[in-house]
Each structure stands twice: as C-alpha cells, then as structure tokens.
Image (cartoon, rainbow, N blue to C red; front, top):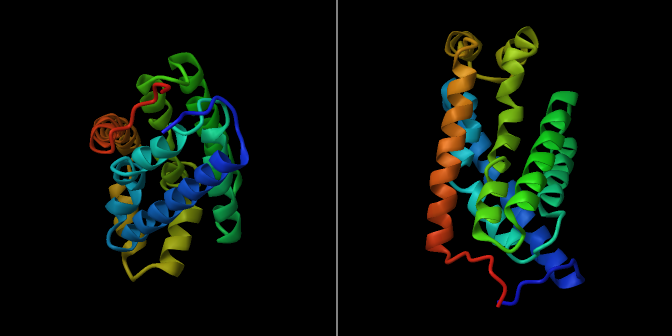
Length: 194
C-alpha cells in the first residue's frame, strides 16, 4: 500500500468507511451497558480492545492531520442523530481529537509510534457516557431508572464512587496500549512510506 501525505477523494472514502466501522463497533460495545452497570462504566476500557486498531487501519492511509478529527466528527454526528448529544460529550470529543492530533503530530505521521500514540485517546469517545455519573449523578440515575430494568439505577449508584473513575481511565489506557500494539502486529500495520 502506498501511503499518502495529503488528503484526496480515495483516502477520504477509506477514512470515512473506517470511521463508520468505528461507530458500529462502539455502538455494539455500548449495548453491553444493558447487561450490567459495571459494563456501562467500563465502556471505554472495552472499546480499547478494538477501537484503536480500527482507527489505525484508517490513519495509516493518510500521513497528514485530520484523521482523528474526522473520526470524532463522525461519532459526534451519530451522537446527535441518536439524540444523545450534550455538552459533556462535545467537550470529550474535542479533547480526544486534539489529544490524538497532537500525539500524531509529535510522534510522526509516518511512524508506527505516531499511529499507536494517536490511537490511545480514541476509546475515550465511549467514556463520554459514563463520565456524566460523576458530573450530573442525579440526572444519570433518573434516566437509568426510567430507561433501564428495575434496580439498575441503585446498582449503578453503588458501583460508581468517585475513586472508580481513575481506575477506568488507567484500565482504558493500558488496554489501548496493549491492543493497539497487538492490532498493529495482527494486521501488519506499518506507517512507513513505501
């Protein structure tokens, strides 16, 4: 595969296709929140198993800025269409896009290190849902009571003391590092130009 240092119609199509796959995988992971509140809280850690690899498969095609931003914009559009948009999610998505773009810029567009490091923030698009439990607890618990099976809200409340948040963040980063590197090996992802 030839790696392009600029955007064109062909690689834009590839990036958008992988962004849609990223969203589909994220939505499947989000359904796990129906199983148990702990699965809801650990969306991002679960997402770290597959989302960095999907992102890297797209990002290796364009050795230029914009791939993380494209992914977060597509995910934002899915969030808006699903009626789940709020300022917390928007703030998370902007932060993720900036972090991933900066990681790729400083680590290099044509390096595996740049791909891996820019993929690490990507699973945090899923953290934008459970992080609200620590920002607007009453609203999240009220929504859980209305939308989820009986008792889900009480279990969610019990499972989400503030000290759980750093555990989720660290778990997500560790999983992202492990599975991004594993995905790079399995799919033979190499960002070097041919």
